[in-house]
Length: 275
Image 1 (cartoon, rainbow, N blue to C red):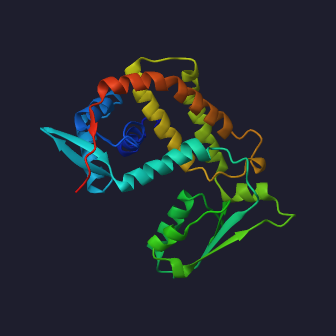
Image 2: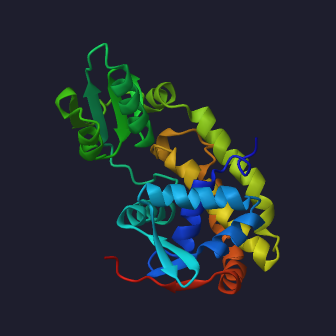
């Protein structure tokens, strides 16, 4: 399965909303979304069910205008989209300015708490941590996990420290032992292979809108899985820098055409204040 095929409709929807709705105080007509997603190979029923599901989860709000239904953002979806925007455009994929600080998180849970242990490990992985030992996880930099731990109800079972490695510590080896570098490197290399041809090719305007949608969704999925390990301790041929260059170059080339397509295809209305 290619990266394009495996992109979920909700992930594409969030990218679409971040591009077309975030920061503009507008709502978008459901028919416009269906039209754009059809061009991305996603059927009307899948698009409608995605909109309904996201509204049910508090990620979208509905606004009726005559016989048409429009969708806008909620505080929750704005926060999700702002976080994605930060990760793509400001944090970036390459950590060149690490100051040597690590966040260490230790936990001890009762043996019977298998679900809580699974949930905690999943959330820690999502937040850039790797398992140094079974109950001791580590992440580069200062990572605030207080909200994450509180939401899981595990504050009494978790201890968090900031630390620096001893002078004789082989940090590069520790990183290789703790994180799945080959999997992450493969994702970056595959991204470059898929998207580098578009650095020198221009599609039609409608295709540019869909391509940019896929480009951003795929890129965000990769960088969200990247713990942003300090580049000076990664292999010399680490592919994140080339992948980020490809992402930015292709995005810049597609954007003027994508904007023209969105102006023609999208029906937007001002978002009314919610009751």
